[in-house]
Image 1 (cartoon, helix red, strand yellow):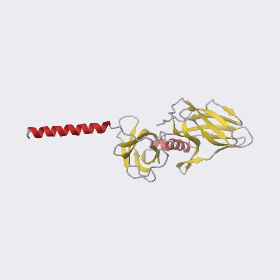
Image 2 (cartoon, rainbow, N blue to C red; image 1 turned 180 degrees about the horizontal axis):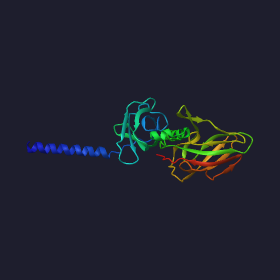
Image 3 (cartoon, rainbow, N blue to C red; image 1 turned 135 degrees about the vertical axis):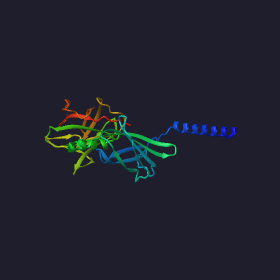
Image 4 (cartoon, rainbow, N blue to C red; image 1 turned 90 degrees about the horizontal axis):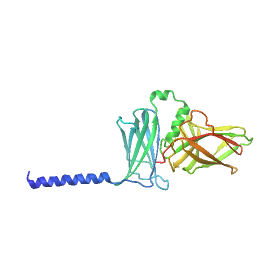
Length: 285
């Protein structure tokens, strides 16, 4: 090889190295693109991860591009689980995936919108082992479903719970909820039928006269959607409920893991006594 050819090869190698370095430093972003995720199963084995992609206005992306998923445990030592999908229907991907072991997982979703723009978001899941599954009650399944549908598995939502006692003889109907920590607050109910869990949006909560209702994991709950700030353990935040007559119930909630015992937090407003108010920790993403 002549000296001239050797110099040309060296120059070409340097050019390739510089090109690769530039690609690695490139800032990839997707402002306004929202990713939501849910899992069909939260136990070790095969599952389907459903990923919904929306634009700034909340509309599904018609041609969202290629979606890549990478699953890792939150501790080192496992082989990552990788999956990919290049087609979606109405902005929804259904991606076969596998939970290879029980524990806490982090799933990173990367959506390639164009050659130089990628939307990325992390989601957290708690996966039960086969032995855990055998000992789980329907309420446990519902609790995991609450977390998964909240992202909270999903990372952008949380769920809040409480006990409401009606001291009056008339039914009290709660028709709306709101909080500054969330873009929206909705009444939801997790239902388990033949071992399959699903979540339904409720228009209102009816507290019967001289009766009570409980919002608990695996049942009715408040869904805090599109969090505006992180909800960290031991934080407090304010949430407002309004009934059909316009009565406002301003309440403080504690951010906590599922309490081991009842909280000493009774609040009396109008005809209601509201207690055991707590919400799951979650990241605003």
